[in-house]
Length: 397
Image (tube, rainbow, N blue to C red; front, side, top):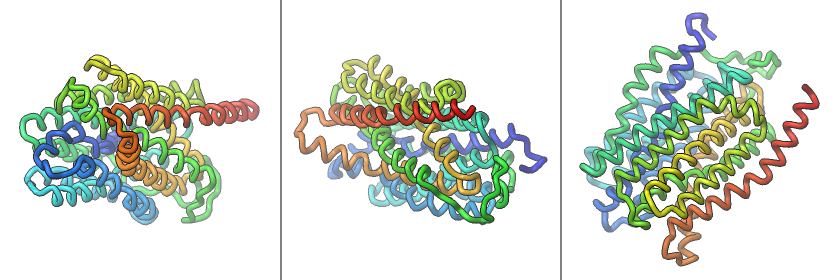
Protein backbone atom coordinates (compact mmCIF):
# COMPACT_ATOMS: atom_id res chain seq x y z
CA UNK A 1 0.00 0.00 0.00
CA UNK A 2 1.29 3.43 -0.89
CA UNK A 3 2.50 5.41 2.09
CA UNK A 4 0.65 8.45 0.73
CA UNK A 5 -2.68 6.70 1.04
CA UNK A 6 -4.04 5.93 4.49
CA UNK A 7 -6.45 3.08 5.05
CA UNK A 8 -9.17 5.57 5.89
CA UNK A 9 -8.70 7.35 2.59
CA UNK A 10 -8.84 4.07 0.67
CA UNK A 11 -12.00 3.07 2.55
CA UNK A 12 -13.69 6.31 1.48
CA UNK A 13 -12.80 5.61 -2.14
CA UNK A 14 -14.14 2.06 -1.88
CA UNK A 15 -17.39 3.23 -0.29
CA UNK A 16 -17.84 5.85 -3.01
CA UNK A 17 -17.70 3.06 -5.59
CA UNK A 18 -19.92 0.80 -3.48
CA UNK A 19 -22.73 3.36 -3.59
CA UNK A 20 -23.16 2.39 -7.27
CA UNK A 21 -22.95 -1.39 -6.87
CA UNK A 22 -26.73 -1.91 -6.60
CA UNK A 23 -27.52 0.64 -9.29
CA UNK A 24 -29.25 -1.98 -11.44
CA UNK A 25 -32.32 -1.84 -9.21
CA UNK A 26 -32.39 1.97 -9.14
CA UNK A 27 -35.44 2.10 -11.45
CA UNK A 28 -37.16 -1.01 -10.05
CA UNK A 29 -39.85 1.05 -8.35
CA UNK A 30 -40.88 2.50 -11.71
CA UNK A 31 -41.25 -0.75 -13.68
CA UNK A 32 -45.03 -0.63 -13.75
CA UNK A 33 -44.98 3.03 -14.84
CA UNK A 34 -42.43 2.30 -17.55
CA UNK A 35 -44.48 -0.71 -18.63
CA UNK A 36 -47.53 1.50 -19.10
CA UNK A 37 -45.60 3.43 -21.76
CA UNK A 38 -45.06 0.21 -23.71
CA UNK A 39 -48.44 -1.60 -23.48
CA UNK A 40 -47.51 -4.18 -26.13
CA UNK A 41 -44.45 -5.33 -24.15
CA UNK A 42 -44.76 -8.38 -21.91
CA UNK A 43 -44.10 -8.25 -18.18
CA UNK A 44 -40.90 -10.27 -18.69
CA UNK A 45 -39.68 -7.79 -21.31
CA UNK A 46 -40.28 -4.84 -18.98
CA UNK A 47 -38.49 -6.74 -16.23
CA UNK A 48 -35.56 -7.03 -18.65
CA UNK A 49 -34.79 -3.42 -17.72
CA UNK A 50 -33.47 -5.01 -14.52
CA UNK A 51 -32.37 -8.43 -15.80
CA UNK A 52 -30.44 -7.39 -18.94
CA UNK A 53 -27.87 -5.35 -16.97
CA UNK A 54 -27.41 -8.44 -14.79
CA UNK A 55 -26.68 -10.46 -17.94
CA UNK A 56 -24.17 -7.86 -19.14
CA UNK A 57 -22.39 -8.06 -15.79
CA UNK A 58 -21.60 -11.76 -16.28
CA UNK A 59 -18.73 -11.53 -18.79
CA UNK A 60 -17.75 -8.13 -17.44
CA UNK A 61 -16.88 -9.40 -13.96
CA UNK A 62 -14.77 -12.19 -15.42
CA UNK A 63 -12.97 -9.83 -17.79
CA UNK A 64 -12.44 -7.40 -14.92
CA UNK A 65 -10.82 -10.16 -12.88
CA UNK A 66 -8.31 -10.66 -15.69
CA UNK A 67 -7.71 -6.95 -16.27
CA UNK A 68 -7.03 -6.28 -12.59
CA UNK A 69 -3.93 -8.46 -12.90
CA UNK A 70 -2.41 -6.13 -15.50
CA UNK A 71 -3.75 -2.61 -14.85
CA UNK A 72 -4.37 -0.41 -11.80
CA UNK A 73 -7.71 -1.06 -10.14
CA UNK A 74 -8.28 2.69 -9.83
CA UNK A 75 -8.05 3.15 -13.60
CA UNK A 76 -10.41 0.26 -14.27
CA UNK A 77 -12.82 1.50 -11.62
CA UNK A 78 -12.93 5.00 -13.12
CA UNK A 79 -13.71 3.52 -16.53
CA UNK A 80 -16.50 1.46 -14.98
CA UNK A 81 -18.06 4.46 -13.27
CA UNK A 82 -17.99 6.48 -16.49
CA UNK A 83 -19.74 3.67 -18.37
CA UNK A 84 -22.24 3.44 -15.49
CA UNK A 85 -23.02 7.14 -15.88
CA UNK A 86 -23.49 7.04 -19.66
CA UNK A 87 -25.49 3.81 -19.78
CA UNK A 88 -27.63 4.84 -16.80
CA UNK A 89 -28.60 8.39 -17.73
CA UNK A 90 -28.94 8.30 -21.55
CA UNK A 91 -32.25 6.29 -21.46
CA UNK A 92 -33.85 9.46 -20.07
CA UNK A 93 -33.86 10.93 -23.59
CA UNK A 94 -34.93 7.70 -25.35
CA UNK A 95 -38.43 6.57 -26.36
CA UNK A 96 -37.63 3.19 -27.92
CA UNK A 97 -37.70 0.23 -25.52
CA UNK A 98 -35.15 -1.83 -27.55
CA UNK A 99 -32.69 1.09 -27.55
CA UNK A 100 -33.27 1.62 -23.83
CA UNK A 101 -32.41 -2.04 -23.27
CA UNK A 102 -29.18 -1.61 -25.27
CA UNK A 103 -28.10 1.21 -22.97
CA UNK A 104 -29.17 -0.83 -19.95
CA UNK A 105 -26.76 -3.52 -21.17
CA UNK A 106 -24.01 -0.88 -21.39
CA UNK A 107 -25.01 0.23 -17.91
CA UNK A 108 -24.58 -3.37 -16.71
CA UNK A 109 -21.02 -3.40 -18.01
CA UNK A 110 -20.27 -0.38 -15.84
CA UNK A 111 -21.90 -2.00 -12.82
CA UNK A 112 -19.91 -5.18 -13.36
CA UNK A 113 -16.61 -3.34 -13.42
CA UNK A 114 -17.48 -1.35 -10.30
CA UNK A 115 -18.60 -4.45 -8.39
CA UNK A 116 -15.45 -6.40 -9.23
CA UNK A 117 -13.01 -3.57 -8.53
CA UNK A 118 -14.57 -2.43 -5.24
CA UNK A 119 -14.65 -5.95 -3.77
CA UNK A 120 -11.11 -6.67 -4.96
CA UNK A 121 -9.88 -3.49 -3.29
CA UNK A 122 -11.29 -4.69 0.03
CA UNK A 123 -9.58 -8.08 -0.30
CA UNK A 124 -6.33 -6.42 -1.37
CA UNK A 125 -6.03 -3.80 1.35
CA UNK A 126 -7.61 -5.37 4.46
CA UNK A 127 -7.39 -8.67 6.35
CA UNK A 128 -9.11 -10.56 9.18
CA UNK A 129 -11.71 -8.76 11.26
CA UNK A 130 -10.91 -5.46 9.55
CA UNK A 131 -11.79 -7.02 6.19
CA UNK A 132 -15.14 -8.18 7.60
CA UNK A 133 -15.82 -4.71 9.01
CA UNK A 134 -14.94 -2.98 5.73
CA UNK A 135 -16.99 -5.48 3.73
CA UNK A 136 -19.94 -4.85 6.03
CA UNK A 137 -19.61 -1.08 5.77
CA UNK A 138 -19.29 -1.43 2.00
CA UNK A 139 -22.63 -3.22 2.06
CA UNK A 140 -24.03 -0.26 4.02
CA UNK A 141 -22.76 2.05 1.30
CA UNK A 142 -24.41 -0.13 -1.34
CA UNK A 143 -27.68 0.01 0.55
CA UNK A 144 -27.43 3.76 1.01
CA UNK A 145 -26.86 4.26 -2.71
CA UNK A 146 -29.70 1.88 -3.51
CA UNK A 147 -32.04 3.69 -1.12
CA UNK A 148 -31.30 7.06 -2.69
CA UNK A 149 -31.65 5.78 -6.26
CA UNK A 150 -34.78 3.68 -5.72
CA UNK A 151 -36.61 6.26 -3.60
CA UNK A 152 -35.75 9.09 -5.99
CA UNK A 153 -36.44 6.85 -8.99
CA UNK A 154 -39.92 5.95 -7.76
CA UNK A 155 -40.70 9.58 -6.97
CA UNK A 156 -39.44 10.80 -10.35
CA UNK A 157 -41.23 7.93 -12.12
CA UNK A 158 -44.55 9.13 -10.76
CA UNK A 159 -43.88 12.54 -12.32
CA UNK A 160 -42.46 11.47 -15.70
CA UNK A 161 -41.85 7.80 -16.48
CA UNK A 162 -38.35 8.25 -17.98
CA UNK A 163 -37.11 10.68 -15.32
CA UNK A 164 -36.30 7.73 -13.06
CA UNK A 165 -33.14 7.07 -15.14
CA UNK A 166 -31.68 10.37 -13.97
CA UNK A 167 -30.91 8.89 -10.54
CA UNK A 168 -27.81 7.26 -12.03
CA UNK A 169 -26.23 10.70 -12.19
CA UNK A 170 -25.02 9.93 -8.66
CA UNK A 171 -22.02 8.37 -10.41
CA UNK A 172 -20.59 11.87 -10.91
CA UNK A 173 -19.97 12.23 -7.18
CA UNK A 174 -18.51 8.72 -6.96
CA UNK A 175 -16.11 9.45 -9.81
CA UNK A 176 -14.76 12.55 -8.11
CA UNK A 177 -14.34 10.91 -4.69
CA UNK A 178 -12.73 7.75 -6.05
CA UNK A 179 -10.33 9.79 -8.18
CA UNK A 180 -9.15 11.68 -5.09
CA UNK A 181 -9.02 8.79 -2.63
CA UNK A 182 -7.87 5.65 -4.46
CA UNK A 183 -4.17 4.98 -5.16
CA UNK A 184 -2.67 3.73 -8.42
CA UNK A 185 -1.15 0.59 -6.90
CA UNK A 186 -1.53 -3.14 -7.44
CA UNK A 187 -1.17 -6.01 -5.01
CA UNK A 188 2.24 -7.72 -4.89
CA UNK A 189 2.46 -10.89 -6.99
CA UNK A 190 4.91 -12.47 -4.57
CA UNK A 191 3.37 -12.29 -1.10
CA UNK A 192 -0.25 -12.21 -0.07
CA UNK A 193 -1.67 -10.26 2.87
CA UNK A 194 -1.09 -13.16 5.27
CA UNK A 195 2.59 -13.46 4.42
CA UNK A 196 2.22 -16.70 2.45
CA UNK A 197 4.25 -17.20 -0.71
CA UNK A 198 2.11 -17.58 -3.83
CA UNK A 199 3.00 -18.22 -7.46
CA UNK A 200 3.99 -15.04 -9.22
CA UNK A 201 1.11 -13.82 -11.34
CA UNK A 202 -0.71 -17.16 -11.11
CA UNK A 203 -4.36 -17.39 -10.07
CA UNK A 204 -5.14 -20.44 -7.95
CA UNK A 205 -8.82 -21.25 -7.50
CA UNK A 206 -10.04 -24.17 -5.39
CA UNK A 207 -13.12 -26.15 -4.41
CA UNK A 208 -14.05 -23.56 -1.80
CA UNK A 209 -14.09 -20.64 -4.23
CA UNK A 210 -16.18 -22.58 -6.77
CA UNK A 211 -18.57 -23.72 -4.04
CA UNK A 212 -19.19 -20.15 -2.93
CA UNK A 213 -19.87 -19.15 -6.52
CA UNK A 214 -22.57 -21.84 -6.75
CA UNK A 215 -24.06 -20.88 -3.39
CA UNK A 216 -24.14 -17.22 -4.41
CA UNK A 217 -25.95 -18.13 -7.64
CA UNK A 218 -28.78 -19.78 -5.69
CA UNK A 219 -28.78 -17.01 -3.10
CA UNK A 220 -29.36 -14.29 -5.65
CA UNK A 221 -32.17 -16.12 -7.40
CA UNK A 222 -33.91 -15.58 -4.07
CA UNK A 223 -32.49 -12.11 -3.39
CA UNK A 224 -33.62 -10.69 -6.74
CA UNK A 225 -37.26 -11.58 -6.09
CA UNK A 226 -37.63 -8.58 -3.80
CA UNK A 227 -36.66 -5.85 -6.23
CA UNK A 228 -38.18 -7.39 -9.36
CA UNK A 229 -41.57 -8.26 -7.90
CA UNK A 230 -42.24 -5.65 -5.22
CA UNK A 231 -44.08 -3.23 -7.51
CA UNK A 232 -46.19 -6.10 -8.87
CA UNK A 233 -47.07 -7.31 -5.37
CA UNK A 234 -48.28 -3.84 -4.39
CA UNK A 235 -50.40 -3.70 -7.53
CA UNK A 236 -51.64 -7.25 -6.96
CA UNK A 237 -52.72 -6.38 -3.42
CA UNK A 238 -54.00 -2.92 -4.51
CA UNK A 239 -52.13 -1.15 -1.72
CA UNK A 240 -49.57 1.01 -3.55
CA UNK A 241 -48.04 2.40 -6.73
CA UNK A 242 -44.62 3.42 -8.04
CA UNK A 243 -43.88 5.88 -5.22
CA UNK A 244 -44.78 3.31 -2.55
CA UNK A 245 -42.76 0.67 -4.35
CA UNK A 246 -39.72 2.92 -4.40
CA UNK A 247 -40.22 3.75 -0.73
CA UNK A 248 -40.44 0.04 0.09
CA UNK A 249 -37.08 -0.70 -1.51
CA UNK A 250 -35.66 2.38 0.20
CA UNK A 251 -36.85 1.06 3.57
CA UNK A 252 -35.07 -2.22 2.83
CA UNK A 253 -31.93 -0.28 2.08
CA UNK A 254 -32.19 1.52 5.41
CA UNK A 255 -32.34 -1.85 7.17
CA UNK A 256 -29.34 -2.97 5.15
CA UNK A 257 -27.44 0.21 5.92
CA UNK A 258 -27.88 -0.28 9.66
CA UNK A 259 -27.01 -3.98 9.55
CA UNK A 260 -23.99 -3.33 7.35
CA UNK A 261 -22.46 -1.15 10.03
CA UNK A 262 -23.10 -3.86 12.63
CA UNK A 263 -22.03 -6.76 10.41
CA UNK A 264 -18.49 -6.95 11.78
CA UNK A 265 -19.81 -7.44 15.32
CA UNK A 266 -22.32 -10.08 14.21
CA UNK A 267 -19.67 -11.98 12.25
CA UNK A 268 -17.32 -11.79 15.24
CA UNK A 269 -19.92 -13.44 17.50
CA UNK A 270 -21.60 -15.89 15.10
CA UNK A 271 -18.51 -16.80 13.08
CA UNK A 272 -19.33 -19.18 10.25
CA UNK A 273 -23.01 -19.33 11.28
CA UNK A 274 -23.44 -15.76 10.02
CA UNK A 275 -24.47 -16.82 6.52
CA UNK A 276 -27.13 -19.22 7.82
CA UNK A 277 -28.58 -16.48 10.02
CA UNK A 278 -28.90 -14.21 7.00
CA UNK A 279 -30.68 -16.89 4.97
CA UNK A 280 -33.31 -17.56 7.64
CA UNK A 281 -33.90 -13.85 8.26
CA UNK A 282 -34.47 -13.29 4.52
CA UNK A 283 -36.88 -16.23 4.36
CA UNK A 284 -38.79 -14.61 7.23
CA UNK A 285 -38.94 -11.28 5.41
CA UNK A 286 -40.49 -12.94 2.35
CA UNK A 287 -43.15 -14.63 4.48
CA UNK A 288 -44.05 -11.24 5.95
CA UNK A 289 -44.30 -9.72 2.46
CA UNK A 290 -46.37 -12.58 1.07
CA UNK A 291 -48.89 -12.33 3.91
CA UNK A 292 -48.92 -8.52 4.09
CA UNK A 293 -52.22 -6.73 3.73
CA UNK A 294 -51.08 -3.17 4.34
CA UNK A 295 -48.17 -0.88 3.58
CA UNK A 296 -47.09 -1.07 7.22
CA UNK A 297 -46.58 -4.82 6.88
CA UNK A 298 -44.86 -4.32 3.52
CA UNK A 299 -42.45 -1.81 5.03
CA UNK A 300 -41.76 -4.19 7.93
CA UNK A 301 -40.98 -7.04 5.55
CA UNK A 302 -38.79 -4.76 3.47
CA UNK A 303 -36.82 -3.59 6.51
CA UNK A 304 -36.21 -7.19 7.61
CA UNK A 305 -35.17 -8.07 4.04
CA UNK A 306 -32.59 -5.29 4.10
CA UNK A 307 -31.13 -6.63 7.33
CA UNK A 308 -30.87 -10.10 5.80
CA UNK A 309 -29.31 -8.76 2.61
CA UNK A 310 -26.60 -6.99 4.62
CA UNK A 311 -25.78 -10.27 6.34
CA UNK A 312 -25.79 -12.61 3.34
CA UNK A 313 -23.86 -10.44 0.88
CA UNK A 314 -20.71 -9.70 2.90
CA UNK A 315 -20.70 -13.24 4.30
CA UNK A 316 -20.62 -14.71 0.78
CA UNK A 317 -17.90 -12.38 -0.44
CA UNK A 318 -15.72 -12.58 2.68
CA UNK A 319 -15.85 -16.39 2.54
CA UNK A 320 -15.00 -16.29 -1.15
CA UNK A 321 -11.98 -14.05 -0.54
CA UNK A 322 -10.85 -16.13 2.43
CA UNK A 323 -11.00 -19.35 0.40
CA UNK A 324 -7.99 -18.39 -1.76
CA UNK A 325 -4.70 -16.48 -1.52
CA UNK A 326 -4.70 -12.69 -1.90
CA UNK A 327 -3.55 -12.60 -5.52
CA UNK A 328 -6.26 -15.08 -6.53
CA UNK A 329 -8.98 -13.23 -4.61
CA UNK A 330 -9.72 -10.77 -7.44
CA UNK A 331 -10.59 -13.57 -9.88
CA UNK A 332 -12.41 -15.62 -7.23
CA UNK A 333 -14.56 -12.62 -6.33
CA UNK A 334 -15.18 -11.89 -10.01
CA UNK A 335 -16.45 -15.43 -10.56
CA UNK A 336 -18.69 -15.21 -7.49
CA UNK A 337 -20.09 -11.89 -8.74
CA UNK A 338 -20.64 -13.47 -12.14
CA UNK A 339 -22.67 -16.17 -10.38
CA UNK A 340 -24.50 -13.46 -8.42
CA UNK A 341 -25.60 -11.64 -11.53
CA UNK A 342 -26.47 -14.85 -13.36
CA UNK A 343 -28.81 -15.66 -10.49
CA UNK A 344 -30.31 -12.18 -10.70
CA UNK A 345 -30.78 -12.55 -14.45
CA UNK A 346 -32.51 -15.94 -14.44
CA UNK A 347 -34.66 -15.14 -11.38
CA UNK A 348 -37.72 -13.65 -13.19
CA UNK A 349 -37.66 -16.29 -15.92
CA UNK A 350 -37.56 -19.17 -13.45
CA UNK A 351 -40.15 -17.67 -11.12
CA UNK A 352 -42.52 -16.59 -13.91
CA UNK A 353 -42.31 -20.09 -15.40
CA UNK A 354 -43.14 -21.79 -12.10
CA UNK A 355 -45.99 -19.45 -11.19
CA UNK A 356 -47.32 -19.71 -14.74
CA UNK A 357 -47.59 -23.48 -14.37
CA UNK A 358 -49.51 -23.16 -11.11
CA UNK A 359 -52.03 -20.75 -12.63
CA UNK A 360 -52.06 -18.78 -9.38
CA UNK A 361 -54.37 -15.75 -9.20
CA UNK A 362 -51.61 -13.99 -7.23
CA UNK A 363 -48.40 -15.04 -8.99
CA UNK A 364 -46.19 -12.36 -7.45
CA UNK A 365 -47.28 -13.29 -3.93
CA UNK A 366 -46.58 -16.95 -4.73
CA UNK A 367 -43.11 -15.94 -5.94
CA UNK A 368 -42.24 -14.61 -2.49
CA UNK A 369 -43.39 -17.88 -0.89
CA UNK A 370 -41.26 -19.91 -3.32
CA UNK A 371 -38.22 -17.72 -2.60
CA UNK A 372 -38.76 -18.16 1.16
CA UNK A 373 -38.70 -21.94 0.71
CA UNK A 374 -35.51 -21.73 -1.37
CA UNK A 375 -33.69 -19.57 1.18
CA UNK A 376 -34.80 -21.60 4.20
CA UNK A 377 -33.76 -24.76 2.37
CA UNK A 378 -30.29 -23.28 1.84
CA UNK A 379 -30.18 -22.28 5.49
CA UNK A 380 -30.35 -25.84 6.82
CA UNK A 381 -27.04 -27.12 5.36
CA UNK A 382 -25.51 -23.70 6.07
CA UNK A 383 -26.17 -24.26 9.79
CA UNK A 384 -24.35 -27.61 9.80
CA UNK A 385 -21.47 -26.14 7.76
CA UNK A 386 -21.19 -23.19 10.15
CA UNK A 387 -21.21 -25.37 13.26
CA UNK A 388 -18.53 -27.64 11.79
CA UNK A 389 -16.32 -24.72 10.77
CA UNK A 390 -16.75 -22.96 14.13
CA UNK A 391 -15.86 -26.17 15.95
CA UNK A 392 -12.69 -26.65 13.91
CA UNK A 393 -11.72 -23.05 14.49
CA UNK A 394 -12.20 -23.50 18.24
CA UNK A 395 -10.06 -26.62 18.25
CA UNK A 396 -7.19 -24.82 16.51
CA UNK A 397 -7.46 -21.61 18.56
